[in-house]
Image (cartoon, rainbow, N blue to C red; front, side, top):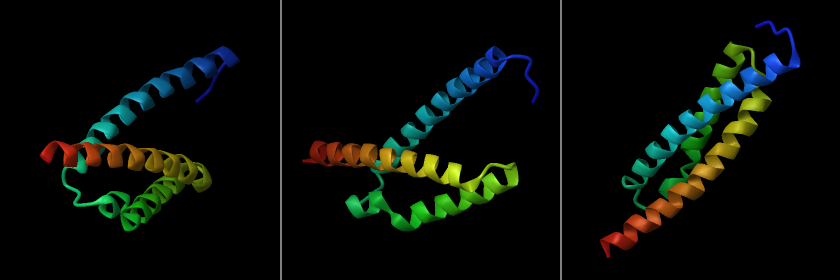
Length: 98
């Protein structure tokens, strides 16, 4: 990628941010759906799955030339936020069944 100005860089970052928001929104729909398949809060937290995801994205980051520390921080933050969201969804589903 080459840029001729800081505005070019910022515009590209804005485009990427927009794409990321759309992709995260799709992910949130999947997380919401996953809540229906989980039996309890420990199934939502799923530490083995978290480790699996972090390992996978770290490998992908290395292949893409991205420092693994960046992807690990980003993914752990997203995972934490999605766990909170999924716990809320899970609790709402349980209340609806009662």
